[in-house]
Image (cartoon, rainbow, N blue to C red; front, side, top):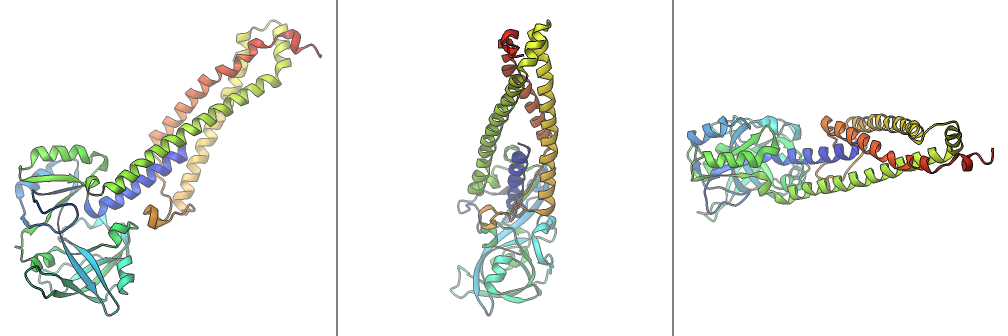
Length: 373
């Protein structure tokens, strides 16, 4: 049970963190009829009033401006379509630090003479590019049939393991997108918010909707990527089913153990009754013995479960198909209150179940138990 909780919690937390690392937990933009999910936005001017409201919320950790634009990356080897995500100099880059596999973060240049780009490992292999390489970005301009071209340098390569990201996204300086879209220097596509606790995203979203101006709106990232989070939610069902099955097996084993103890000691029970012991006194003996077995099992099971969790976190011996599960190994996350809850519930259930087989003591009579002595 400890392993089931730890693996499910670790899996849900790790995959959720990957999704949120790129886009935050909430997206705040102005009402736009043409905007839907991840895609190019209409320009909006930075709003100090909105920005102060967002930063004043205690649940909000980071507030970052962003903008996106579709483009094509080209090398001598190949060409690949991507969605460029523009970020500012003060972007909270620690959100993406764990995904960097090669190179460094963007080098921001206000003159845009040395444009940099972060691409995924998947994209790098597709276009045969590595850090330090010069590649060309082709932009389709709606006002012209001729694509616009900009040279960029690959500053770094990242890998999330989430196909939707690795096949699509590249990161650049937001000033590059502003220049290509003829935006002003204070125009952005919107704000993305990173929270201290991702589980509070809907609650914080409702608070912000009440606080920000009516022409602005906030959307939880879980609504933009519902397929991933619906799939993660299904893991709770799996966890519940596994937990129920394990409880049933544990209860059956405990009952069987005590029945065997009673039947093996039937002659002893008969002798105790013959010498004046009551059913209650004999039952207490078996309850004590069964409680010792249950407590030893709980302690040993807890130690074994936590030990396996530590080994998995250290050596990652349980591997997964990253293309299907978004992670290359099964992540483990131990939550101590869950461990305590499992132990307490297991003990209480065991204590109650012990009464059932101990009732056999009442059915054993001294005459039948000692007739062959």
